[in-house]
Amino acid sequence: MSVIRRLPEEVVHRIAAGEVVTSAAAALKELLENSIDARATKINVGVRQGGLKVLQIVDNGKGMAPEDMRMACERFATSKLQTFEDLQSITSFGFRGEALASISQVARVKIVSMVPDAVCAYSASYADGKIAGANGGQAAPKPCAGVPGTTVTVEDLFYNMPTRRSANRNASEEYRAIADIVTRYSIRYSSIAFTCKRLGDNSGSDIKSTMNATVLENIQLAFGKNLAQELLDFKFEIDGLGVSGSGLVSNANYNLTRRTFILFINGRLVDYAPLKKALDSTHSEFSPKGSHGFFYLDINMRTEDLDVNVHPTKREVRFLHGAELIESVTSAVSDRLKTSRTSRVYYSQS
Ligand code: ADP
Ligand code: MG
Image (tube, rainbow, N blue to C red; front, top):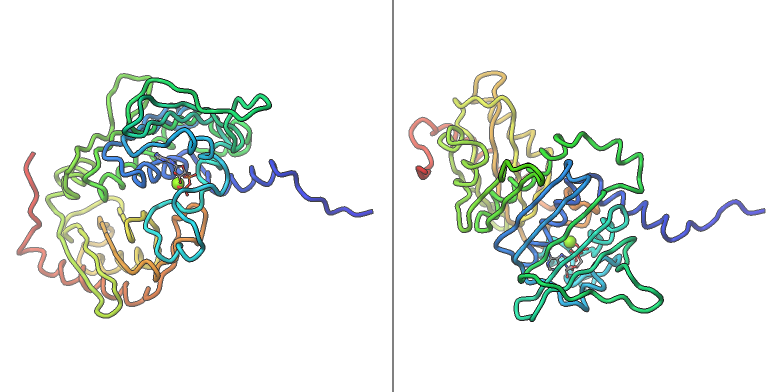
């Protein structure tokens, strides 16, 4: 008698979804990236119970037509990638067509969307990768009132994954993780107006950036004027490798209790531990023992040199020329810290 059996499709999907949607903050990151991909200039995030009860993203991007809304939560359905080769030159955040599908596997999803020239918006609910309400026939998004753009509401995250639900941090910690991601995007995408707030209390927005602000203004907004005043700007470029970038580092005499490392490569928020480590050690050469630095880095390289398809969450990337990159960035930072006493970056009073 055989013992190996093929898993039912729903089980496979739910397992895979758990890899993409590891937390409410991970879901938020996907939704935020969809809004930026849709060229939104305003993105409002609302959160209840750390995103486990409600996570809502309202954008004013290009919206979805009702035909597309039908497909939005289907696994591997995307408007961004067509051939495998496209991956080499992909500039959108999304390409796997997995985020909404995964979220709808582990939560109740509702989307209201309107394309700019439509007469009305459409709304649809989704569960398990499918649009809800198909009583035998093909379910269609329902017309409703709305404004151009897209609102995605995620409710009862992990309702069907008890272990994940209880393993998730408490609501305020999870909210902090969400606000941290919104903050980082608000800095890199400083032309977009972001807000982030807890729904249900009247405390207002915890994050409120304006349209067409600068990187420095949004750092000041999030981390305070004291830090913003102490930031030094630097640039670097590796000849012949197509790698260049700019960044901000805190003055060596400015003491932070905790290191902050914000890294974007080709516009993507990523982690790169070797660079973080190298920068820590560069900074410590100049600063008092036990103090930490603030690092903001915006690096660009050829899309074909950056592999974004390492992990479903896309937080991890691989690229060519890692050693040269570390060398180039650390020497730029080191040069800048050396001259830190004489010059400071311009920042605006507000
Ligand atoms: P991917 O981003 O990899 O394409 P997703 O599951 O995140 O996959 O989204 C599926 C599709 O739904 C996208 O390709 C896009 O066409 C559409 N979509 C999702 N979010 C938005 C949004 N905020 N505005 C407009 N279209 C969206
Ligand atoms: Mg996406």
